[in-house]
Amino acid sequence: MARQQIIMRCRVTLLTVVTVLVSGCSTAPDTSSTHESLNATLWSQTAADYVAVSTQAYRVAAANLDLALADSDWSAALEQQGNYSSLPPAVLMDIDETVLDNSPYNARIIMQHGEYSQETFTAWCEEAAAPAIPGAKYFVDQATERGVTVIYYSRRIEILRDCTTRNLLALGFPLPDQQYLLLNDKQPGTSKAHLRTELASRFRILLLIGDDLEDFVAATKTDPAGRKALANQYADRWGKQWIALPNSMYGTWETSLYDFDYALPRMDKLDLKSRHLDD
Image (tube, rainbow, N blue to C red; front, side, top):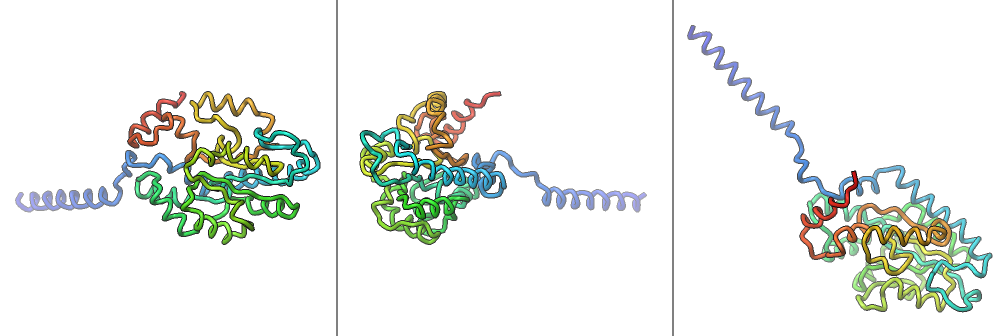
């Protein structure tokens, strides 16, 4: 009897050890800590579909260049006024997620379970290591070969000029003059709509290329329904004068979901965003 008790105790002890070891090795992930940008960033970094869509967008843009150059009445900017047919041709391109791929920065945010900050983005920019968006270099080469001026305009702030320039040049994007790199110095005159107005007085704007509604049209700071209405209002321009790149990681599409209140705590933003889900 004593011998049987000893054997039973040994079996229980062994089972307990095995259970602890197995559970310790196969603990289920804590899904409550999954970052809200995980799938979007993985799509940008791993999906063949993302490469296809971006390449397709730039192939369409390159094909439209010849159409635009041949039609002196062609202009992509709603802000273009007066007799612009004899102005030199140019294309306006956003930078982030249009020319430069910042998904590695977003991946760092996810790994740290954090949020965007100007400090961490500045550190990322200083590395000048963002890869090119698929198709972007092909398109820019086509534009420069045709004598079309490429103008980059961005919400990046002025202190990022040097690292942005280094990144663009390292990838072979032309930047013959700093006047063709327009950044935000947080003055009203550097809003994208204002910049389009100013540039349209000096160039015939053939194409607008970006990943955010504000890259194409003014008055986008409204609710999602209003933004969709604005996009539909100019439906005839998409894929013609306006070329949109995919970006599900961030943008004013997202901030419109919490009324552009950037100071809200993260969990409050998540709560407001989840209310827009339609099942």
